[in-house]
Image (cartoon, rainbow, N blue to C red; front, side, top):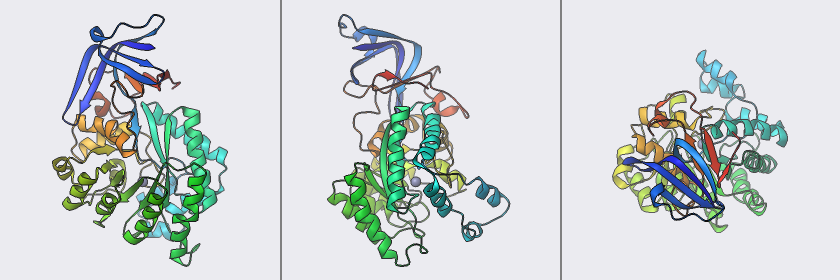
Length: 400
Ligand SMILES: [Zn+2]
């Protein structure tokens, strides 16, 4: 047994944050057995290890539940071109956009992708992120999708973060590579999915449903195949238009519907009934200079849990700060501090189908972040770097 004492312990719900002074957390192996005022701590076993928390604020380790952080190269040149007045069409016409990331990801070795991916994951780690979801989707062929999911696995081994791997089967379509569109859909939803699943590389399956991406029928074909294999699904839904994404996600009992700026009131109600989490991605909203706000009041009214993620990707959110995403969820979308904190802890865990983390209570994993700050609001308030002081994952201190 280990006991972390002399801490201020944070508990939160979407409506309030509560800090318990002079608190302690005890765990055996990786699992918390006690969290509360030190005065209530059951008599410890002889020989247990005591750790001094130096009066720091203890929060659950943060969870980034939507990233595309494995990719080759970057797209800074496109960013510069857009600032210079180039349109998305101009950029696409010169081979830019998502296909540029596909090309750069295909040519890089597994080792190169691990090196750049670990660097980005470590930046999140420094902000107290203990669990990361990583999507594939820059392969558009089986070999590269396999490589990306193997790289995601390796990142978790190297950083000690929990990595959940999502096969983003329908991300983009290349008419040049697949003159018959149905051939690509059939491959991505059929043999590729089966091979990746058989290799043990898939924790969930995802798609991008949108007028410029994939249709409801195409996503349905993929989701039916995923369900037949017992895999949970997630969806990039209603980002650029009200395209029925939230309803489709709810119909399949999806873990989450992500982006959701254009989700309708009926879509929010369907998500609530299905227990589907709304994953908000304010840094992508910001980078795209979007104006349509997600229906936060409907999510609140129907009790849809709201999570927040970095959406780290080379095109629309070159961001490795989950705290920046929390800050923007508050300033751009109007979330409160407790909502933002639930959004990167308990609700983010639900968006990944994880029930063993996100709260510091008995029975949960000892994933604990320690901060030298006075109030929980500072986690959201500071713009720029605020490092976690100590991070314990599964009860073990990790190197930052
Ligand atoms: Zn995404």
